[in-house]
Structure formats: structure tokens, C-alpha cells
Image (cartoon, rainbow over all chains, first blue to last red; front, top):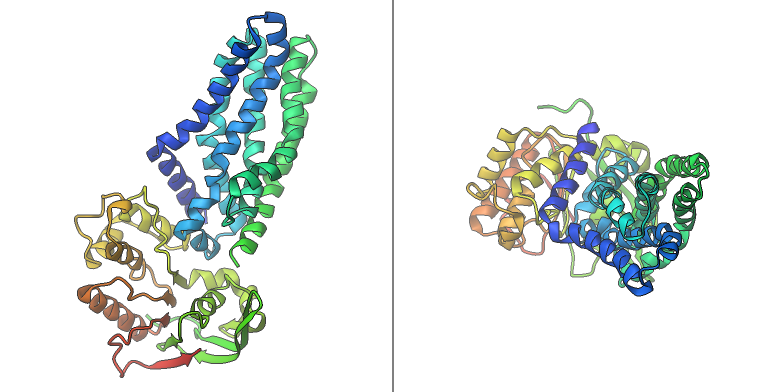
Amino acid sequence: MTAALFAVFQRDLRIALRRRADTGSALVFFVIVAALFPLGVGPEFGLLRRMGPGVVWVAALLASMLALGRLFADDHADGTLEQMLLSPTPLALLVLAKTAAHWLASGLLLALISPLLALQFDLGGEAAGVLFLSLLLGTPLLSLIGAIGAALTVGLRGAGVLLSLLVLPLCAPVLIFGAGAVESSLAGLGVAAHFSLLGAMLLLALFLAPLAAAAALRIALE
Amino acid sequence: MPPATDPTLELRDLACVRGRRRLFRGLNATLAPGQLLRVTGANGAGKTSLLRMLCGLLAPAQGQVLWQGLALPQVREAFHQQLIYLGHAAALKDELTPLENLQVAARLGGRAADEAAARQALADAGLSGREQAPSRTLSQGQRRRAALARLPLGTALLWVLDEPFNALDTTATAWLLGLIEGQLQRGGLVVLTSHQPVGLSEHLPQVMLAL
């Protein structure tokens, strides 16, 4: 069983590596959107510092939507999704392996590059660190919630827009606590509460999201 | 290699409804070890739907599919361990090589996938020299061969093949016929659809099912 999970995980990472243009485009999108705000608003440090956490988080949310559309769509188109449904390994675990690979090739990269973007908003070293950690906790959550949406819209025409409409509202709590953590760090308050809540949501999603996505995939492929 | 338990597949009073259309109803068939089930029918008669139903991808509108005497949902895991399904799509990842595709498919099916065996299977399929090429560079027939190379790997008891002879040339057709005969002689079961009357020799124990 672990062999099957590892095979799927490794396969998806390998595909992400061989399609660097696709993997990179979400990252470039993230950087550009976050860079447009300081350009548009002007170099007013106080304002940028106020906006920074929220803007970077919203940009990360939108960038992760970009990559999400292909999570199951490609597998559905070439028939490998059917093979996953016919595997003796439980589908929910395979979905988890796929989501993990997807996060490594999207969310993790967004989190890694976020301290650079924090510079544009004049966030200090500590706030940049908190931003990185909040994205590190939050982006897997976005991938997991997104997996449910991607599974529900697999095989539909115009799935991209529908997916965003479905998933973005569900991601609101992640955005609130993620950006909130950075804001309270800027205000000199503790960040433990925000991180605990993000962590709790992540644990819950780790358990529930693969089950929901697996159920959705079974329905979608009937 | 004689299987431990008696592998039989039984379709009991199956009905299929797609959208508002009833494709078939009251379908019964039993397949014993070493037998081939050949599904024939016009385009749109429900051949693919029937195969998907056999695999458990599609829930029957009525009736049930039994594997070794038990209804599919109860034996899903054990059943899928013994199943290889090849649908219309070749289930190949364009970015991966045929060798990588084959190994992932085998592991996903719960079978071991050592490289030597996988290479041998691809060579038998007539793909030697192309094992390391990206699958997107393969022709339609070669993709089909790469997908069919999964069959000789491992010892799945039940093969469900949707139009396996499509896009194959005469050499590959002969190779596939040999694989099917071997599987039947081992006591395995094969279910296939095909509209062409390919040379499945008469002496093979087969059950015909016309939709």
C-alpha cells in the first residue's frame, strides 16, 4: 500500500519537475500580483505595512487557485484517475499523496518566496518570519480544501472559474487567521493563538478533506 | 499457477441507465476460470458502461456483479487486487516514459514492479529502444502497446479490456492474442469488447454477450 502511495507521490513530483513552465507560472503570478500593489499605492511605508500581510496572503490564495485546476483534470483526461479508483489502495490516501505532491510543487514554493515579497511592504524581519510560517501552515490547508473543489469540478466544462467560486469562500478562515498572525506580530501581540487555530484547521482538513475529495471523485467518474 | 480460490465472475440481472436512456436490462452471465467473455454490440449499446460496471467504476441501476460469490462493494479491495482494467484512454502520463508509466501502474495495482520485468514486458510489446522516450512522442499504436504491457506484469486473475485491438498492427494483434490465450490457460478470466471480428480462435472457451 505504501508502495502505491509513494509511487503516486513520486510520479506527481516528477511531472511537476518536467513541466516547470506550469509549476513556475503560479509562482511568477504570485510575485507579480504582490509587486503590483506597492507600485499602485505608492511608496508610503505606513500604508504598505498595514496592507502587506493581507495583500501577500490574498496573492498566495489566488496563485494557489491557478495550480489547483490541474490537480485532477489531467489525470481524468488521460485515464489515470480511473486507474487510481481501481487500485486496492484506498482512494482517500491516494488523494492525500497527490495533494502532498501538489503542495510541494505550489504552496511550499509560495511560502519560501514570501519573505522576499515582505521586503516590498517594509515588513521587518520578525514579521517576514511570521508571514513565512503562516504560509507554511496555511498553504497545505489551501491545497486540501482546493482538492475537494477540484474533485467536485473534475470533467466539467469551465471548471476553472467554478472551482474558484467554490473554493475561495471556503478559504476565507485560512486567510483571516494567516494574515491575522502577521498583523498581530506587527502590533507586538502574540501569534500563538493564530498559529494554533491554523494548525487545528490543518489537522482537521488532513483528516476530512481526502475523504470528501475521494467521495467526490467517485461520483464524478460514474 | 492455480489460484487459491475459485475465481468466478457473475453478472446477475444487471441494468444500466445513462441519463434518461436505458441501455440494457436483465443481463445475466457467468464466467468461470479460463473463460473469455466477449461483449459485442453496436456503438452506444453500452459496452463500455458494462465494462465499467464490472470493474466497480459504475454502480448498476439494478442487479449486481459478484466476484467469487460476493457482491462487489463487499470485496472491493480483494477484487481490485486481481483486476487489470484498460479503458479507451491508455492511462499514460505524457511527461513520463513508458517504463515509468508501467512501474507506477503496477505499484498502483498493488503489484511489484521491478525494473527488469518492466523492461522485458515493454520489449515484448515491441517498444524496446523507446522505454526512455517521453510517452507524448509515441504513436497511437505504440501508446496502446505501452498500456497493454501492463498485462503480463504480475498475476491479475481478471483482465477487463475495452477495445484492446484498436490501433494495433498485425504483429501487436498477434502478441495480444498470445497474451490472452496465456491468461486463459493459466486459469485467468478475460472480458473484452471489440467490434472487429479479430482472430480469437474458436477453440478458446468463450462466452458471447450481445447487447
